[in-house]
Amino acid sequence: ATPTAVMVGTGVGASQGVLIKGGQALESTHKVNCIVFDKTGTLTIGKPVVVDTRIFIDTSPQEFTSLVAAAEVNSEHPLAKAIIEYAEKLRQDEAYHVWPEARDFESITGHGVKAVVQSKEVLVGNKSLMLDHNVTISQDAEEILAEVEGLAQTGILVSIDKELHGILAVSDPLKPEARQVISILKSMKVNSIIVTGDNQGTANAIAKEVGIHTVVAEAKPEKKAEKVKELQDAGNIVAMVGDGINDSPALVAADVGMAIGAGTDIAIEAADIVLMRSNLEDVITAVDLSRKTFFRIR
Ligand code: ADP
Ligand code: MG
Image 1: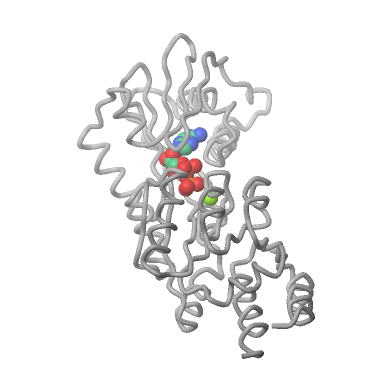
Image 2: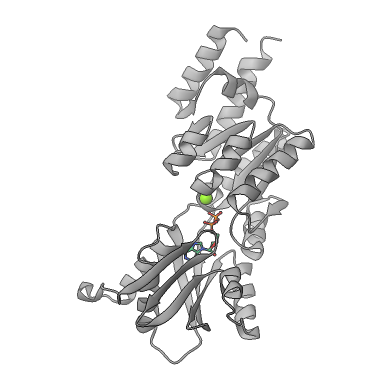
């Protein structure tokens, strides 16, 4: 393509909210045959909501969620925000939106949080967080988790002094356009896969809803990048679409990194293309634009 054609291409992109950081990004995009999607905040809306609690001990839901909120109040994670919102809703009276004091707060990336509340050790997070701290997960709890994950929700486990006290079910629905976008990409000969830090069960259920067959779950940031490299080594030209700090190594590793505009600054900086509207249809816009710019000339 001529420099003018590339300029026109990036200009058209910008006018549609697809920010392409330079000619190389626009050129690489037309060769993409494989797209790796992050789940939370990319395929899903990214605004998780607590939809259910299962409590195993003799305590009120208010008491239970207050303790959980106390442990989560210092976390920046979207799941923590969902828990705080839920705890506030259970305590209608705003005068009670004060959680017990938490000490020794610790955020364990990709697993959850840990804090001391009312002299008790509170853990909130996924199964590996519990297993790493020698918390036993009962058969009952396993069944509830499977049920929750089958509904494409994430089960968050809560232990107090190493004993499992309850599970919160969190729902983060698919973006309305997600399924159709994946199907259109397929018709454009672009294969889609999911990589996520979330558990296998939830990831599989979301994959099924959106029409994707390949899922890499429980993936740490480096693992996401490794998957991208693995696909490249197999001869694919790979785009990565993500919104989080945990996606930035993969965004950099990919032939084309695409960041969701509503995502974190670190992801936006790491990406070659920014989807300002945060709408997945713009993945198609980017591929289309690149194909039009680079196929026309040959
Ligand atoms: P994703 O790749 O889907 O954005 P993360 O790597 O951020 O996921 O987190 C992976 C998993 O770790 C979450 O699905 C959740 O089970 C658990 N987790 C992480 N942070 C928290 C938190 N603050 N509270 C509860 N659970 C958490
Ligand atoms: Mg994400």
